[in-house]
Length: 146
Picture 1 (cartoon, rainbow, N blue to C red):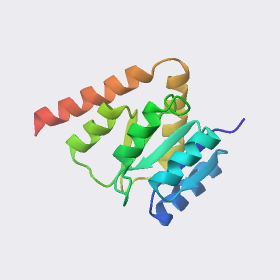
Picture 2 (cartoon, helix red, strand yellow):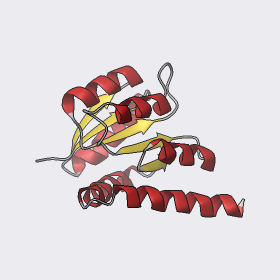
Picture 3 (cartoon, rainbow, N blue to C red):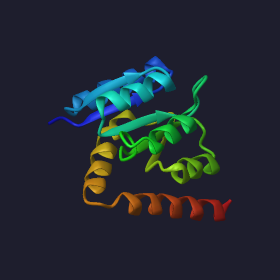
């Protein structure tokens, strides 16, 4: 069965970029243009992973992540934040909230499918918390250098 990826981003070009690159790798892509429709899609379609923009009008990515993580239907879906905010604190916040990874915009779309594939393989092996710990220690190391 194809990996199902839900892309929640208010920018159509970003959703298209994700769709083209992930579909080229044989993944099924669902799209949502805002937080509320993203939550609905996640609950109804049970994606394998969510790519979630942080900066969206109305319900932002942080709030969407919180909603996904407290809902039994969606709590186990790994969340990868897509963010134009490259500040380390923002990235740390995403991981602290329960996200497993983040991608800073602009990103190389060709790297998206391997990232998703690798992440899902690790989550399936029960390494979700390890992935989050690694990300947090990477961020701590970067913060110490600032």
